[in-house]
Image 1 (cartoon, one colour):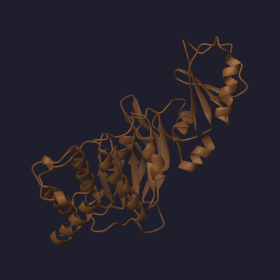
Image 2 (cartoon, helix red, strand yellow; image 1 turned 120 degrees about the vertical axis):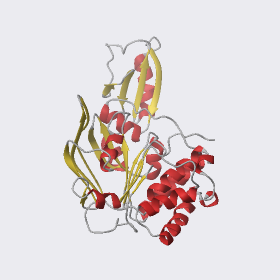
Image 3 (tube, one colour; image 1 turned 90 degrees about the vertical axis):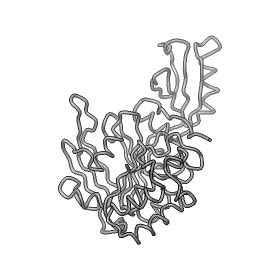
Image 4 (spheres, one colour; image 1 turned 90 degrees about the horizontal axis):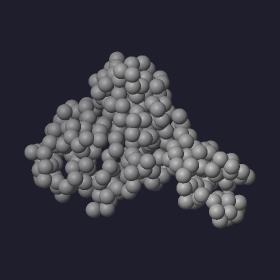
Amino acid sequence: MPLAVGGTKSSAGRGDGPALDVVGVTKSYGDVHALRGVDLRIPPGRVTALLGENGAGKSTLMSLVAGLQRPDAGTIAITGHDVADAPRAARRALGFAPQDLGVYPTLTVRQNLMFCAELAGLRRGAARDRTAETAEPLALAGLLDRRAGELSGGQQRRLHVAMALVHRPAVLLLDESTAGVDVRTRTALLDLVRGLAADGVAVCYSTHYLAEVESLDAHVAVLDGGRVIAHDTLSALVDRHARGALELTFHGPVPEDLDLPWPTRPTGDGLRVLADRPHEAAARLLELLGPTSALSGLRVVRPDLEAVFLELTGRRYRDEGSPADA
């Protein structure tokens, strides 16, 4: 089930320190190094998107923050409470909606939310109020008396997230919460994230959909090989790391005799040509290559988050497409 433990109101606005502070965190599983000295600081009211391919360490980091595992080294604090030394206080300030759904199918939506609220220490009257308040923005108000097992997949996903925030956490972890959901659910969840941040909640959000990160205008932490290799605002990362480019693919390997007037970098299946005016460069490039070249494809790339990821890692981000439309 989603993690919702303790607390009757959000402590997101307390003090001047970060809501979530991860310092030097390392985690290994045998010979596999999942996290290597990760630092991540998220102040109240900020949305931070964790960006990385499968296996980069996103879910491992979230499970450590939630106290479901212990790091091999480093510290994690939630609203100033060390997860290892003061786990109850840390968990009172945290809500966590992991990838796998954790609703109770035989209970109604109301009972699921009331259970989590009371588990968090709210009295019945307060739990009833928070259930109604949490259900409304996630389009669950009309479903409160329906069994969770009778809900659609998108409705169950919205309930799953609601169970993690019914106690008003200061920090909310959302791990792939829009994966495979319908448009209505996706819109509701993204609107919710914006609203929570405006209310002072620190949101740590992982997704495979780059367009979501761009629409949220979130801070971005790029994980690669268990390390945070970049962390800044979206606009700052684009300004610093992304240039316009042309992506070339060839029939067979990249020709060794290419002599182009722009910087180039190899990609997994071709060549990336860096050019500030890629549309103009495309015409010149085709002229230089000539009609007998082995070129099989050419794509103009605008400076965006995908370009940032490619610049930082040398690999194209494996965006899994748009969420489902149905």
